[in-house]
Length: 404
Image 1 (spheres, rainbow, N blue to C red):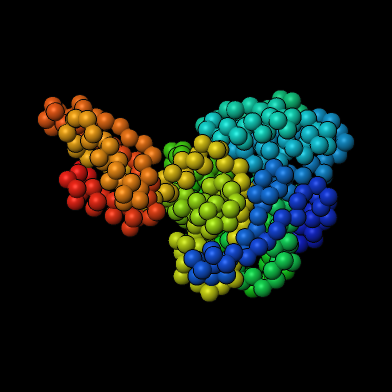
Image 2 (cartoon, rainbow, N blue to C red):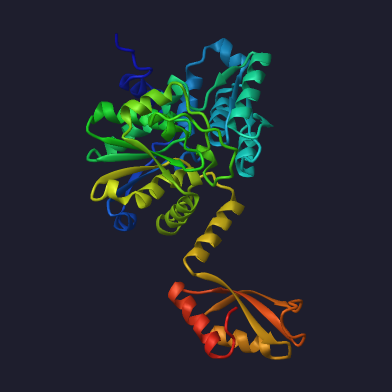
């Protein structure tokens, strides 16, 4: 006896028709530069261009539209690290449906603010999504609200799958799709749609290695209990994927790949610099996987879902500065100098002659291991690249100021 699938292609097509007037049909565009870097043909699906800057509003709206009048009047509850919350809040507000959203501690400030700005009641509670979910379910029971699961619901999954219909309509020759994975709602909808239209297409999920629950489950391993970790990809920081989504991913996905935090940061910075588009950490995970697992994608035509663009500005600035430091375009040097007039000017002149730009400078006269008539000078210098940074170091060394 075969089990009926929780959703069919017809459900996804119906969702596409239902939400068409209220969500953006985002572009799927080829990136010549990223293709050259990754060694495959890269097509990017820009879901960061949705009104709420995330694919999540597709599933949220499809669910809301299916509610009857009584349920709409009572209102809805949801839990989310940000993007599902904003999707629910925006479309619930647009449809006149009261919404209460529970967001875990550590959710980026911009996501909390935007959710409140859309008119939802926001409760920030719980160390992670598991604890936030318990609070949201309790709230729904006490107030008689309809709970909208962020990923483990057929209506939500069908809504998320609509982006795959668009990708294959735009680029029918795609060989593979690479999708960020948290609870599995997006990859489940994408896989159901894409495999129904083009059975030969291969679907890969991507998780941060700090939250590898889906990868463990589809490989037949138990989900190891880990302490909550800080990740740049909080949108996919899920400890327990859904009971609906796991079987779909097992059946239809080739694999769920893991990427390191530094790889996600690098991909995010690269997309920003090359494509001139802002994505959040979870959205950068897909391209990070292309770089970290090159052999899987070599020479193929690959669609990568840029799932959202809701990243805190302070965090984005940190990522940019860290990436510049990794590339050697910002370097921190410490040199010993005599503590007398003119020495700072001398060092600054040498850096300038070498083509460097001093961003910060500080003196330290409290180093007990050097003469009381000496000091250390800490310089933060901007260089063109790592080779130029080495030239600056050599210029200082050759002039009697060797970096410590």
